[in-house]
Length: 229
Ligand SMILES: [Mg+2]
Image (cartoon, rainbow, N blue to C red; front, top):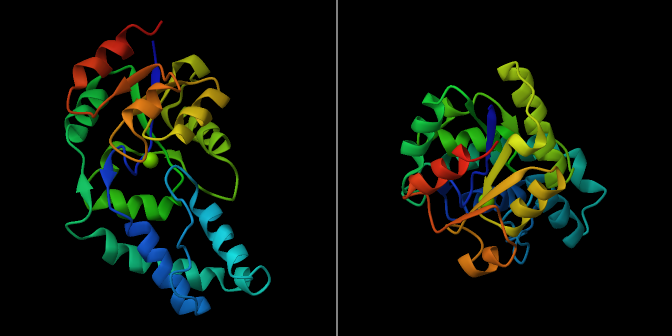
């Protein structure tokens, strides 16, 4: 049984306490001259380009904005490298041990399923040397929705690993209601972890296939994966 594990990043593998938002704010301020451009824009579980669109819309930059996007992204990535490499960027408990374990299992495959732009995701993960576990993934490539991003992750992983993955053998692991909804939309199973943007109780109400308080007790996850047929 080949299982594809699609991992969310923020709130699931790491906490960088708003490093992406801070980097976007700094780049936005320098390129577009607007301070605190992302204030009031909820970012957990969303896609980077949606946040940017929301900021353009909020500040009336629909026309002027996109033309400067290459400059914005260049600055965003350089700000993110600085913002992500601080003690605010925390590796969550149990993560490395689980990734080492799932990587060793011949029929379990790791990939990313994240609303980050790929370069931003790689910058955040590099601080903890986690990129080695994720040769492939689904990322925010255009302003599509989270389910499309996950589906792209499945297709990218199938191509990379040279094997198809049936929807019921795809397990999305994430920390928000948006991860659960997107997983359901592509017919995947979903493991919710209450280490990020949503409380245990609010995730429980959405009935994920497995709900964990954190990743520090990996046996529950392994048992869950082993019973999938
Ligand atoms: Mg998350």
